[in-house]
Amino acid sequence: MENEKLFQCECGGTVIKEDQNYRCKNCNLIVYKKFMGKNLSNDEVKNLFYGNCLELNNIDSSSGKKYNIQVFYNNGEISLEYI
Image (cartoon, rainbow, N blue to C red; front, side, top):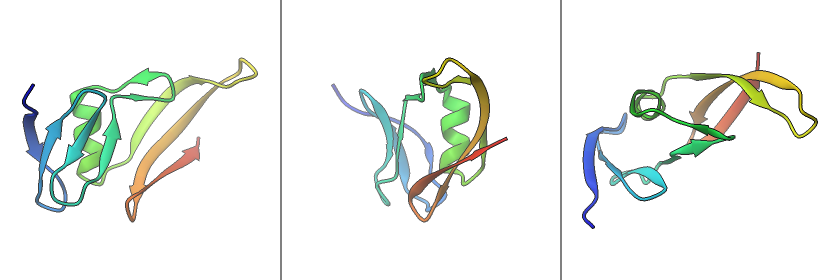
C-alpha cells in the first residue's frame, strides 16, 4: 500500500499517512494516530506538524480520574502540560 501524502510539515517536508502514524519525510517527525487513548483527527495532527499546541480534554488516568492536557512538540520531542 502506498503512503498517502497529506500536507507540508513546519520544516517544509511532506507529511505522509502510514498505518499507525503520520510522518514527515524530511525531518522524520512522527505523530501517532492514537494518543493517550484518543484518536486524533487530521486537523489535530496537522496542528502538531505546524508547531501548534493541541488541547485534549477528558483524558483517563490509570486511577480513573479525568484530566485535560496540552500537547506540543519541542525540538522533536513530545511535551505535555496539564491544564
